[in-house]
Length: 113
Image (cartoon, rainbow, N blue to C red; front, side, top):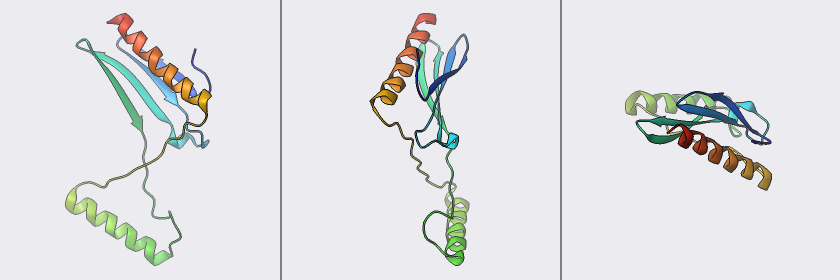
């Protein structure tokens, strides 16, 4: 049984989905975990929305605009922008729930394999 901050969202014949909530309280930081079986190979996929914001930090208006221009040029000329975002699992109970979700998803797919 999955507990605090971990929820099974969907179950199909070849995959199962879980949502793991970030302990910061914002649902924008949640992670979707997908267990999938395809050609007898088990896959574990993580999906997360990542955002970039020019308002982070103590910047004035001109510094924010310059930051946006630099990011836009990097995207224009290199084709990508590297981003990083955190996902917080706090406390032993939440960590155990996350591990339990991983184990349950693996068992589910091994059962149908």
